[in-house]
Length: 457
Image 1 (tube, helix red, strand yellow):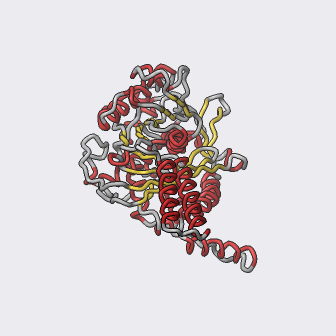
Image 2 (spheres, rainbow, N blue to C red):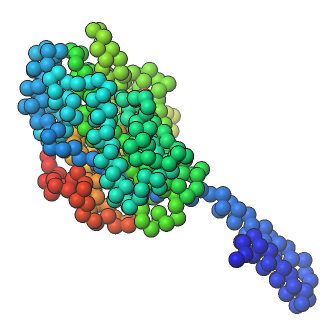
């Protein structure tokens, strides 16, 4: 079979012979023919250099066992029995729980059900295995792949970074091939889940015909705070157990089997700014106890980070009219009327569904305000927070699972996955649905409770 360049050359020779036989000797005929030839060759080589599209074949979310559920009463009762907490600390955590937007059915790992909680490395590794192994097993089973089919492995966990790494633990467990490209992301905060997918996409753009898995979780036993400082106690109250696995591929056959195609990604951060850098910060308290501080400037830092991020993302995906109105409003505010409001682009003109950070009700509503979203748009984030709590880097996939469970995602719909993490870092993924999502996934963590939602929170 002839290659395309050879075929184009053959066509040129054939037409030149035709011109000679027909005595079409005018130079214009030869000029047009050669122009077409060079244009065709240029187009061919430009297309051949473009990387294949990256597909999100499928994903899977972890549902912890019922024994790990932690109703408010159990949480407060256990906290009051831990000597490290005084009465004021317990009362603060009780008030935080009530106003958090969490339900009575969220989960904590077995190590944190002990009195006192077990927070050493062995328990953290057990927790990682408890979450990641079932996710890996079920994702491989669901997509009918073997561990040896995986070419790229990315594992993200912000607070726990053992040696050997979590990615090495997975490779060892599943006897994966020796040339697998493995990465372990830590310290990236809640945005690590989307950053992991962005990293996988970049790797798939440079390595043809490959399959990648991204595993996202947060190990809570290593992040538990047993002190008295209120900004550090928040983590104990809202972070909960969870994990997700995402399978991506650039193989040609993936186009027919995948749920989504990754069409845009963008990463920005404000770590250069002290307010953003210290908004969420891991440090020791006055007694030398390690914890994560949530500072009062967090919402302001998030707002500023989002403002610059959505401006850049909007320039990539928004129609010209929305971009025009936004720029004009900025110029008006700077040059004419400082009290004028800046026009908020309507991302809903190009995006139908939103997976937002489910770190807490105030943050969800702050993000919704900045993007001019309505109650239905933020429903998946609020319901995920209610049912499962803040699961850090894996929360977005529970939100997408919620939308799939409600049969809201249609072929051609766009989904914006917005990741926010310490730093503050921001990472956006825009997915396009390739087929109707109507299957009844019995292994989804939403399968037994999706009919109860939405509820008022």
